[in-house]
Length: 220
Figure 1: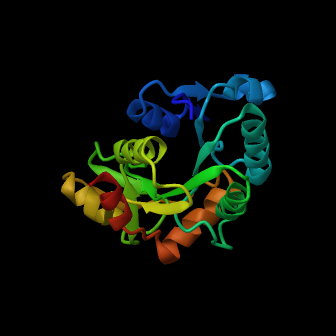
Figure 2: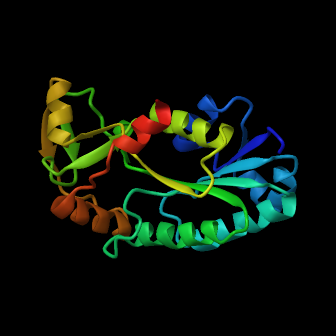
């Protein structure tokens, strides 16, 4: 298999974390989408990231997988989400359907299910503000750990057919804020997107717990 690895959706913070950990990874973005198969030629593997809150992630993922098959890509690692099948969160359901497409793609596949990014929290100020319960339980993932996990599954054999939940640590927002010498405060949902409103409501009730053992095992 060719050692060249593509990162589809490689220009955002997720893609940058993967590229930082995978030597020579090739970032592909919107400019490559009209002829993605040509952009993928010569790549033996691809890390697939859909845009945040994509209105039809299964269609996006399906088109990317079709381009990979045309280009002769043999391995795909799909960037999903922890707890993909949550009926209350439409964008999670899109990832659940996309996981099924990946598993039936005919490519050698691995699925990564990351928890909420630690970097989504601003821990630099005196108050950490989030639009959900600051005492809800979470499995948080550091982007550097995501990159390291992606590198392992892309570059080492034995991860084909595996699905890994990824979290660097389990904590609440309040606990993280206190460790940073700050307080934590729940603020009103800004209402910028109905899917985000649904997600914050789910977080209020359940948080997003994610186990840390799979990541520790991957990076051991």
